[in-house]
Image (cartoon, rainbow over all chains, first blue to last red; front, side, top):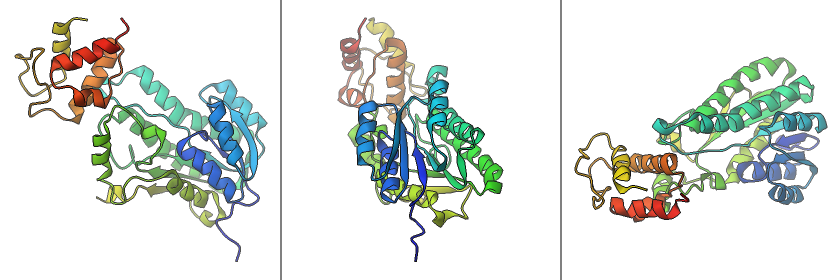
Length: 246
Length: 78
């Protein structure tokens, strides 16, 4: 039997690929057969990831919050079978201390830039029929609220909302649009010295399976990019070690 | 930096307990209102008012308001 999870013959773009979850998704997608295109802001780290790709496409060092750089990437990209929106930032502030500068920055990176990347790819007709769009979201803002996390949660809630509408609009082209909502994954993103190691250890106890690893999310992304999920659209794949069932 | 102003700014992060008796020697975590939310609020207040980034560890190792004031002062560029 053909492996339904194979990405052989597909061209996939991964944003936020220089670190964390995006990095692992790029490596895994490529290992599963996809010609993999990556973007990220950090030249050195992105190049290191690019060297790990089994089937490298191209790397684009870019800040997707800058419209010109977004336009340039869309112009240079080939037609794609998959897009994974994994670039994201976080900042812990009690809601009372939320300010427009930080809120704008988080919304720009986590919600506006990924939305416009998909928007511009569609305008340029660079998403192939039967393609797959995967937003890397979070259980935060969609299933849970945790202190200090209002800005990030709001951006991830917005992401899941827009994803459902894009899913409906692209269904005639059999382009599927889903999101993965992970719990805490061990990456530099959560390596926030606002919280002590003790606090993180206490938090991890709330996860029946403990904190996750980037590969836990990347394997879900491979499924959503592959033809194995051809009847799955508008959905949320929760990958959280059992956190939300508690 | 002014310790009296700092005490009042830190006291502002409490909503339930009476903070009128707060001094530089007050053990600011030894009260029933103290929580991770108060810690986060103090970190945000210090960032706002002094452009200093406190860590969770800075809070953890401080006992008195003077302790935390000294850390903010040492990290302050002004």
